[in-house]
Image (cartoon, rainbow, N blue to C red; front, side, top):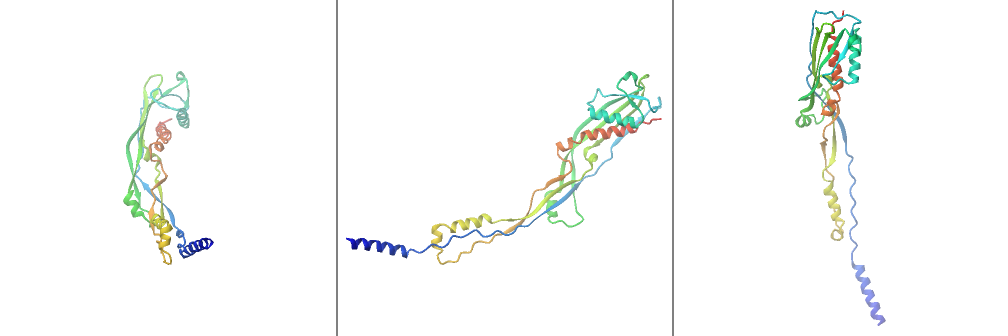
Length: 268
């Protein structure tokens, strides 16, 4: 009986000794060093000068140190704009008063409008120095469309005692012509591995027990990484374009148009 047990274990040990060792596990190959470089492109549009119409009538001469009351009951004049108007009139050597009964003239703000108009189209500018992938940018993104606001301001100066209109004026400008900034966009030219999933799948499959047994004493070549060069999407770096960015310009546009008009008042 003891002899049978010894013989049984001997056969099992011999069977285990005859089973070959599986091939070693494969490791993921080291990834190549990937290069990337950042570039900028510029978009520009044509600009227009502000449209200004100013008429001063000879009925009453406006003189230095005369008083003016600002009336803006037909428009929404902010405290900041009111202060700016006061400073502009002071620069013309006119005195701003709050009590209309003490004023020589009334400056009425009749129009202070801001209106969304047709988008402004910015054209891609060809750089002086050759730029990698510029042709691709020109093909995909030849223009940029930006929201545009038209600002309009009109005023009238009236002689208080007689009610005579002494001066009236109107000005307007669009937001693109006001800020005059080009649009700057950036993109990255970068290398990427296009077959990373294929390589990982191959290694995973070859590390299964069945595959390791099948490739005993066999050379296996892991697929090499393949790289391609790609361009990222454009990212805006400079210049107002969307509605929120353009709307932020409106206080400055109103002041700019108002100051242009007040500067047209002829003071003796």
